[in-house]
Image (cartoon, one colour):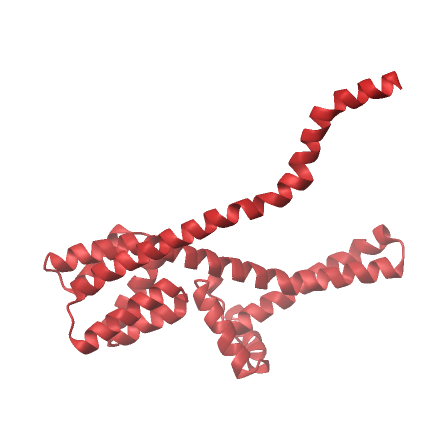
Length: 247
């Protein structure tokens, strides 16, 4: 009775202090990350402030004894402040990227099941229900949320478009756009699903080939700075020892 209203009031203060543009941008990022811990933009800022305060307090508590000077203490305090403000942003960005990668990996299999279900005579909504039952994961959760929105009265087009905007994955946005166009033009959904599944698999194959072509370039620095020196020591070390002995 006391904690939740007080927390809501404090998060409301942080929410109102943000500009509308930053608030909307942060809200979209939280939605793309799966709304971790149920945080809204104000709650996320409050979490950053709490983490920064704890880190700064820890530095002030024992940092001066370890630093030995005010300059070192100021550097540690600045590091703690940067840690408290940047760490949640980094974790949020990593979570967004991981969710998008998971959606892209699961999308071809989901489209195959949708295609088979629709061609077998199921309606598109029932096919989505079958997908959410067979494929647990981020994409299934987003599809289930879209289904719940449709049950509450939203149109299929709006629910799917909001899902694509919320996730932010390029392949999912392309798939939803194709469905919306098919719905507007009256084209059969089964053909669209099959074409989209083939297209997304082709894109995934191209991304894998691109990553394979980048591998030699990424391996160059570890080879030059770590593997080659050790190899030279093993191969040339005995010869150099013998040369020094003779000299």
